[in-house]
Each structure stands twice: as structure tokens, then as C-alpha cells.
Image (cartoon, rainbow, N blue to C red; front, side, top):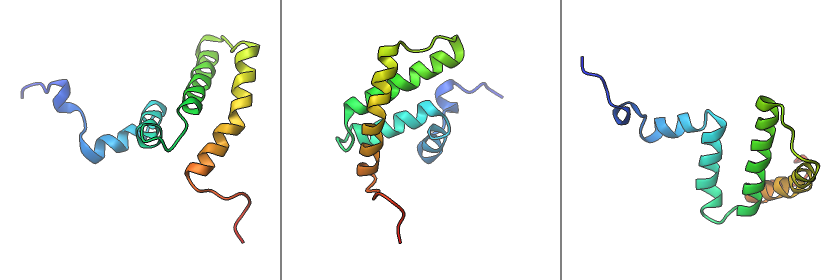
Length: 97
């Protein structure tokens, strides 16, 4: 049986999208393509969130925490990021009654 080339082994269509959502990098890529590239979500907030994710991972794997200035930037941007996600998804505040 001949060996399949990488391109032939890559999932296509819905399977590819499903696999993309299964890991954080794929989720961010899908989020960016769906919301950021279309202008529905603020590009600067997306960049900030990715920087925060990268800093957290660096802290996890390299024991290198972000600087105090970076940490303050991430914390300050977190509320704006959450508000933008809620707005994008049309989430109202508080539980529905």
C-alpha cells in the first residue's frame, strides 16, 4: 500500500473544521476567521488575548511569568475582551427570567 502524502492525510471540509476546534490554536484560528477578519470583533482585543495566552503558556512551560507591565495590560484588557465577546454574541447581562 503506497504511503499517503501529508496533503492526502489532512482532513478536509467539516472534518477539518471539527478538528480545528479541538485544540486551542485551531479555536483561535477559527475565532479569528469568523469574527476578527469579518470586523465583528475588535482586532486589538484579539491580539491582546493571544498575547495573554502566549504569556500564560510561556509561564506554564518555561516558568517565565509576564512582566508586571504585561500582566497589568492583560488584566486591564480582560474586562474589555469579555464585554466585546458578550456584545458579539448578543449576550445580555444577568440571568434570563
